[in-house]
Structure formats: structure tokens, C-alpha cells
Image (cartoon, rainbow, N blue to C red; front, top):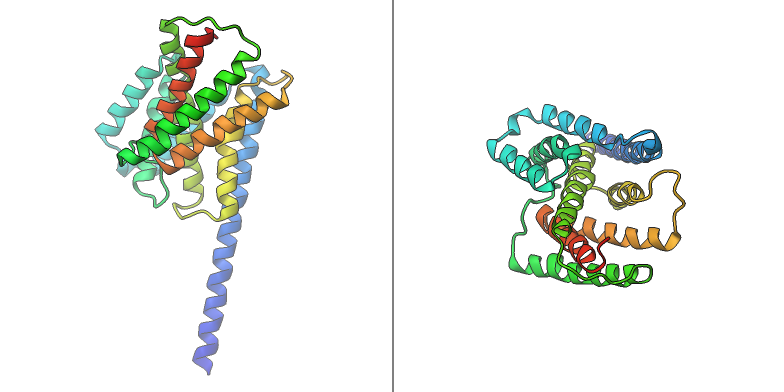
Length: 256
């Protein structure tokens, strides 16, 4: 009887510890979300997101020193070069490296590449068609068609897709995973992660002080939800590819 009582006591204590740990993870995720929103609100005084991304990247690299590899470094450089975005070059190199090192050791991760052809269709081709059509219908309401192949359509697509997918989602989710100790998130924590990966990125398209249109905000949120879902369910490269296609076609058809 005494042994049974002791076992029950231990079980209760273990449950209490797990609940306390889960509360800590939830609290930290909420603080991360608040912090990113505060940085967005400070935009009128300058863009502080690059500083945030560098700090987060260095922190993850420092915490996972043993996971460093030349391959990760080369991929980081390649992504930074393709982004054609000098402001985010360092952020992308170290952001990719830091996130990749953490994912390699975690049960919760975002893959670099899709694993099957089915993934490419389900999480690549179909979302690209849906979001491109949605974006075109949205744009045509206020912009005349000015169809022309433009080099800046390629440049614009790369400048937007790589930094936004690598930094606002791939890197930031790695920070979420670190806060969760690499364990599977609860349903509420998963919702928080989606909000963290979507809301700051959506708000970034509406500089602080600029009046937000509810419809525009809603549509941008749809794009954010789908692109986040692609990364969580498939891979970083598919999310970058879909994002690039949306922007490339928009710039080709409308020039803006």
C-alpha cells in the first residue's frame, strides 16, 4: 500500500512538472509574439527586424555549436546570394545555419527539401495556383493590366520570397522549437506558433502609421497561413518557390 501511495505521489509530481513546463513554453511563445509586434510598431523609427534576426541567429548558433557544417554554411550563402537583398544577406546566412542546426537535433522541424513528388503537387503546385489566382483577382480590382516579361519580376520575386520565408518563418519557428525544448507542441501552442509566423510578417507589409484595409489584411493573412502551412507540412524550398511564383506573376501581369 505504501509503495502504491509513493508511486501515485511521484506520478502527480511528474504531471505537475510537465504542466509547469508547458505553461513556461506558452508564456515564452506569447512573449516572442509581443516582442515581434513591438518591433513592428517601432518601424517608423527604422527597420529593427534585421537586428532581431541577427541576434536570434547568433543565439541559435551559439546554443548548437556542435551542429555546424560547411554544407549548411554554403546553402546559407546560396540563399543569401539569390535573395538579392543586401539588407538581409548576413541575416539569411546565419539565420539558415542557426535554424538548420536546431532542426537537426529536434523532433519538431522544417525540412529543406520536399520528400516526395506528391508533396510537390499537394504543397507546391496546388497552393501556387490557388494563391496566384487569388492574388490576380485581388490586384485587378485596383491595378490595370500591364503584361510584359520584366527582369524586375524575377528580382522582385527573389527579394521578397527568400528573406521572408527564411527569416520570418524558418528562423522564427526554430526559435519557437527551441522554446519548446524540441518537443511536440500542444494544440494551443501550435496556434500560437502559427500566429507568430503569420501576424508579424503580414503587419510588415503595412508600415506602422499606415491605415490598414481590413480586406487587404485578411487576404495577406490567407497568404501567410498557406505559406506557413507549406513550411510546416513540407519544406522551406517549396514555400520559397510558391512565394516566388506569386510575386513573379503579379509583377509580370501588373508591373507592381
